[in-house]
Length: 612
Image (cartoon, one colour):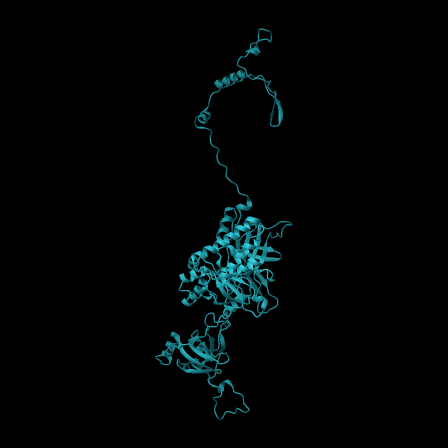
């Protein structure tokens, strides 16, 4: 309405509902071409649309579309391409080729039947000749698959419309006469509007007819099958007589009885096979005597035979026959004496049927048991423990040696200390002192050397903790090792090439021996008891005096000089009673300890009294 009034003040009205004040675009693109767009307001567009709807009369199709929705369009048929629609569709024709023969007077021509295949996919053809046995001709694919050229036009090729029955196809100067086709080819050509000729048969080949007319005759002669090898082969083929025997191999050291299998074949030949036991270590070849005819006795000839100038032929010898073999007999086969002790069930049935032998007894043969070869192990190389090294010889995958867990739990934490000295003719080795520690939980031993000042030997570890093997046992598989019963005062122990003699022990060793009489005999316990009680104080006063002297010495050293610059000797520890006897003098008088002369003199006199 505003557009019908003049554009003058007072004639224009403001639209209070308007929210978009942008200037509309006057150009629009339709199919890539810019076009002008008429400018209408929103109210004008709605009015024009309402007027158009009111003036339009709905037809039946439009009403149906508004009611039921748009009409479905019919589905279009899917058209396959030519190479897919005609794939594996072949026209098959039958025919023949008449081939003239110029090099043989008895044959003028040959008839060679062929199959002509036409591939509709790419309009190619192929000619195949079926193979005939004993024809002497190169048959098979005569012309490979390709487009055959047509003789009537340059560049033209044979199409399926050019093929029909009773017609000649000229291909590379070769005439192929088509006589028939299969049922699918007939239907395809008739549907295409081609009128087919009547089929005709393929003419016969003169040469093949001549071969069929030849009468095959074979000259026969009477043969006495009872005396021929053919009769034995036909009646006894795959029938083998099998015997089991034993023979003594005199060439082996020591003499050995070996099992063999004797097989008699249809032509009276024999074969001797060895029956190897499993894992016997022999070669896998079992043939002892190859298949051949074996004579009974080569020296058994008639007296009139001229041995001096005539060789022995096969006809002069008598060979083994089935009736010469029986269980329980000894036979000589090429110098080998074999005892037959058994046979299989077929052999028993064969002898019962042909020779009337009812019982082919089976004799039990007991072989002498072979001595078990000793297992020889290499000596221990000295690297690591001998038990761990031995596991590499017992199995491919070494396993850790088994431990006695009950013994470890029972003697856990038990330590036995012994004082030892070397048994040697060298004077400077006689002054050395050692402490041997034995662990009953796993029978291991450690040896430590005491440090004696000005002796030339620094002391320290002499032997690390391990098991000691007794020198008189040289069997590496199960050697004898030193055990708890071997450690006592007066015993001799060999370790690292040295011979040690145990001269003293801890007081705990005596208690341990008294608690385990099943390990130590009574005489050893008595020896330890005497050596220990001699050094014990006679009364409680003497024991108290000794402890007081030790305490005074410790206090004097700690008070004057402390403990860090001058560590206390181990003999001052009351619990370590093994070194009471001789260690006192050595450490007190030779260690240059800062002790007062009066106290040192007093302790020295007391030690002399105790020793005396």
